[in-house]
Amino acid sequence: MNPSWWTDPAVVVQAVAVLVAAVAAGAVIWQAVLTRRALADANTSLRIAKESLDVAREAQEQAMLLSVEAVKARVAVNAPSADLQARRDSLRLLAPSTTSSGYPQPWPEGKVFHISEADQPVIVRLSATLHNTGPKATRFTLWGALRKPVMKPGGDLVEMVGTEPGPFDVLLQPNEKVDGYWEVTRTVKEWIEIYDERTSGSPGPESELTAYVDDGFDNGASYWFTLLLGGTVVEPAAAGLRESWALIQPSRTDAMDIGRRPVTAKYWVSKRQELQLREGPVQVLLED
Image (cartoon, rainbow, N blue to C red):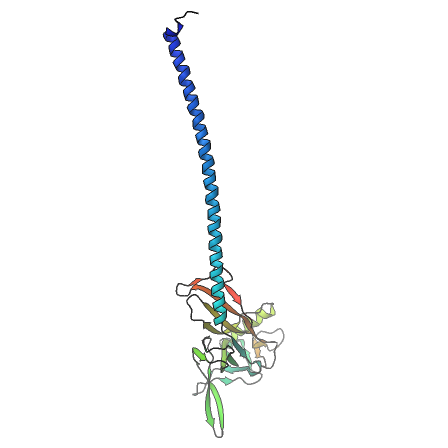
């Protein structure tokens, strides 16, 4: 070999190219090492971040659970207790008054309506009582309010001649009661529709009398005590015919149903903002 080969320009260029390629390869390898380390560090950071997020979520859930339990504990202390009842034996069927008194009049026994009288109102009236059975004075708001009796002296007797609207709300002391009348008015046509629904196996619409209680806390609870009245007061006057409909005697228990919904409570994060408590049960059934 010629000792001056390294001075040959072609050889020098080739040697430089090899050196540059080696350096570039080394840089690529080092970059790969750095990238792998960065990926490993990123995965470690991501894992740590996920673990931290899980810990934070667990802490938040625990805090919310404790908050819910605290609200529920306070709600339980302030929960009202009441008994809302209606007397089935007091049920009466009435007609809107056609006299100057303006008071409903009892329908004659065995009254029969022709289908042309479908718009005639028939009133169901029964006695109802709201009883505060809790240890504290409680204000009840009445939806479908209890009506007050109107009394008229008649000789030595005092006669009830009708009712008038009762109070929208009442403040009852412990063990105090308020008595009144619950009246539901539907037309003959509407009572017939309920009869048809019940004949087909459906209970049909129900009327409600509700006593509502607010415990007074923005993040407290609201309560509903509800009576239900279902059924109908008419049936065909003759089997298979729909032109005439007879009033069902109030003493029959197969036509009208009286029941109670379970007492229901709703928890609130804020009543003013209408935010219900979303952790834990939103509606809680209390013992009746």
